[in-house]
Amino acid sequence: MSVWKCRVARPVWPCVSAVGLAGVISAFCLTACSSHDTTAGNSAETGSPELAGILVLDGGKPAVHARVQCVPGDYNIIAASEAEQVLPSAFETETDENGNYEFDSIPSGSFTLEAFHQESGQMLLVQNLSAEQDEPLTVNDTLQGPGTVKLLVSGEFRENQGGEAIVIGTTIRRKVSVQNGKIVVDSLPADSLELVVYMDGMDPFEFKDVSVKPEETTVWGDSVTYTFKAALALPEEIDSLGAVVSDFPLAIRLTKNEITFDSAEVVNGRWEAVRISQDGNRSKKLPITQTYFDASAKEAVFWVSVDSLNVSDSLEMHFDNTMDPAYAKDVFPTNRSYSLVWHYDSGLEPVSDGAEKGYFAGLPTGAEPADGVVGKGAKLDEGDVIVAENSSAADTSRKVNLNYDGSGYFCFSVWVKLDNLEEKQTIFEKSKEYALRYDSEKGFVVDLWVPDTSSDSIKYAWVSGTSDIKAGEWVYVAFSRHTTSQSNFYVNDRKIETEPEQIAWTGVREKVDFKVGSFTGTIDELMLGGCFRDDAWTRLTYLNQRPENYWPALSAR
Image (tube, rainbow, N blue to C red; front, side):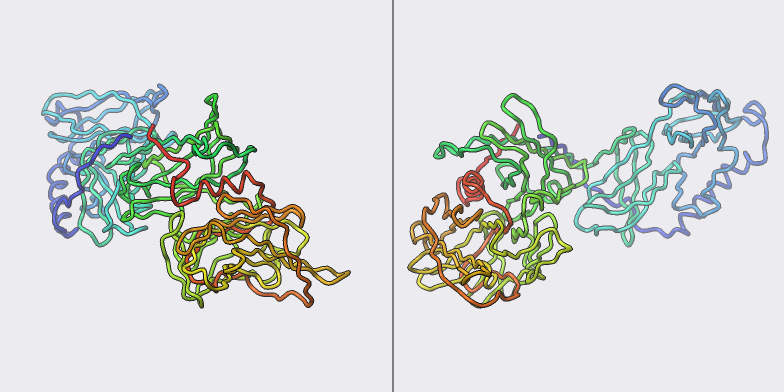
């Protein structure tokens, strides 16, 4: 990790009217420029210094027909009137076919040499040149590609706020706006600049000694990078998964032990992840998304889709605040049958659907945010519900839905914390299709209604028993069905070895939305899908998400 601190941007001067500043600039231009406008000839005739030289492009070719300007040191383009923003003709010229340029006469004192080659977009900026009377000056130099600077700003700046950035003594004037907590200033010539930024409704701010590198983007201010490695070997108490798992969504928690929780540093930048095999081979960049960030709690949660995971691999995460944030939508991909994913991390108004397609936002009634297993959860009383919008009927325009017809695959996983265990309670349900209930005598019960046109339909009920279920403690419940005879049912990391009860039922299915509710407690990390999750996948989900003994644990590289 490398961190270097910047000085706080400060106002340059109190707000001065453009008219007042324009008057100063106007007086300067009339004094300094009028004699050059009326006088022709070289320095020997005028007593003014000469300037000449040869300019080439970055590749070594002559900078043919580049515009060259000689700008007085106190020129202020934003304070000048529109007419005064154009330099006198004596201060502008163009290179010839060999890149040669010359000024017969230039103002005595400090000035800046600017050049721009329109065809290539390459630029030159040479500041703080000094010319003495009757002394010719030669400046040979190379034009380079422009760079971009991102200036970190404080909370007083609002997103998308507009403004302008200038450099006193040059013709540099750029439109800017606040994007992702940074003022972005592009097309700047390579040099060390003192940028003056005028944001709408604010006094100007000065940023000194901003280094612009050719054809690069730099963040000026707190430059921060982090690199972490997480060994994916299983926790010590776990011998083996028994299988290799692919396309697995891995929850990664960051705490104050790993990073400095300054929101400007950690949010405004890019996190990337790769899987590293035992022989050192690195995978392509993996899909990664941030779902939770709490500066006061000093915790952040990322989800990474690991393309293939076995216990000899490791995961590397890297952060760079010089890059724009970029988060993938396919951490919970549709082609892996993620129909609904509710993390509850972004709040409850509504609950956002973290699955790739994001079809099923949750509309709450009475639920409140609460501490979860991974980030935030949702606290419900007996009458509170969260309903999945537009989930009652299958929609052929969508690739996934929340319906279960009894013949296909079905799976879910969820964490739930019940406040009391004395009453029967429903955790979630889609009436006459599927449900997860709690029964004080039976424990957790998974119901699946399977219609049959040739005989009475059957409701299957898988019962967990009451072992490992305690009031006020988080419990992981996961279920997958391939066929009636092939199903996986887990409570925490214990597989429930039991045959389902069979109950005959008649009637038709009701077209109702999927809903969470009718219990008193807290819920987190609810995932529904239309596939079969094997034992390795199910146990790995438990090991990764459980609220204690975080796995995998990150360490700095």
